[in-house]
Image (cartoon, rainbow, N blue to C red; front, side):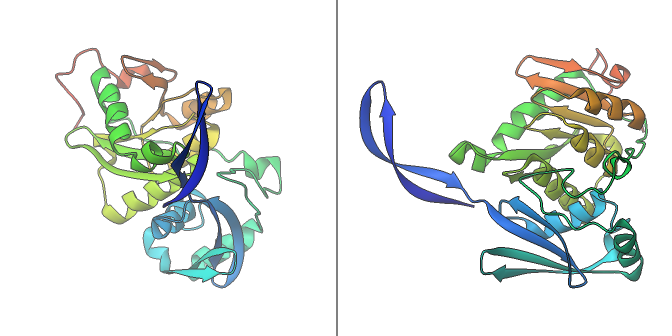
Length: 270
């Protein structure tokens, strides 16, 4: 999801004409049962995964079966993802009373109260055990699963790293929250074992990223950049291990370091 543009490139005081690749970013309206809910600026790919992942991480549906149908429709200035949800999910939407107008990856736009914005994360289980080398492997694999970023330099990536199989799923978007929602939707469709893998993201770890990762049951969130103080607090509340500054040869563990063992002989509890 990119386009070619002509640019004047200046380097070391010299100018030349080049072709550059830029990421697409379009308004994507999410509607439920023909009612507008949110407009997000997003990369127009994997939108069915985005629809399901957003619905799950926002608590609109509790199970993928409650999302009955998804259609992607072209509109004059963007796209509409038209979803049909169950009557139970429609009741949840009615209670939320949210009508968002979001920026790229905005996690708080349109929240009606501090309490609504500061929802507590879902608690995760405590079965995952892994060696430190798995974190380094996940970061390296995420780079390989990040083709749009390699070409444009403008998008984030979220991936699921399985301790047995490596990086099995990855999704990209101009918004880090969108990329994670796309991954959540992908995982929900594919079916996955929560205790044998973890989420790795190419961005910083904000509290919304912890919240969304907990919604899919990930016991570990690995971010290549820094966590925020609130993300650390939320990870503590969820029982989640939070890793930041995950770069080649180094990383920082902020919560529940006991999941990451010194020995690589045992990778997970059964």
